[in-house]
Image (cartoon, rainbow over all chains, first blue to last red; front, top):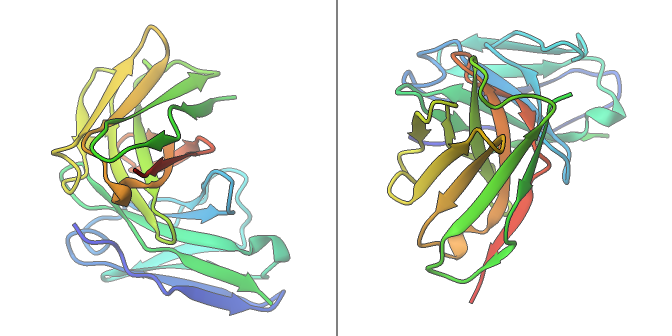
Length: 110
Length: 120
């Protein structure tokens, strides 16, 4: 069970769109539609932004969207806002009731 | 409103057993449809799934930690606990407890996290 691969950092200006990738294998991301994304502000509890690849929990802005192609999932944040600056983690079901996380991506709003 | 709160020692010596408890308020732990789990964040690194438990006691663990980890539930106290044996400095991390939506495999409610440092 290996960690999913995410870029260490991405950045964008307010109003722009950014996309964070999450690459796994056919045993996790590619094999199941159980990919979730979490926003983590340091010192706070992580917050789920996307589950089941593209589903938004109640209260999460429409600016956040998720997708998947093959073994790679993506989180897109459109209309970037200052409060979006945080660490983002992807997670996937990996079979046999196990989960795996990505290494995290630091989003900087310029 | 459901809330989770971790508690336990913040400093351990190598070879000791890490023991943390997660207390649930605003809801019942013995409710179908949810697993109760632990996730940790190693310093400067990403999140790592540790494992989770159903209120019936069924457990699932990260294969890389399975030989050292045990998660238990106490329905009478509305709590669940993490034990991690033979700790080393590599186990220094912020430990989070969280509620997982069963069969959907994502955590929808998290505790604030507690830092556990392993040092001689």
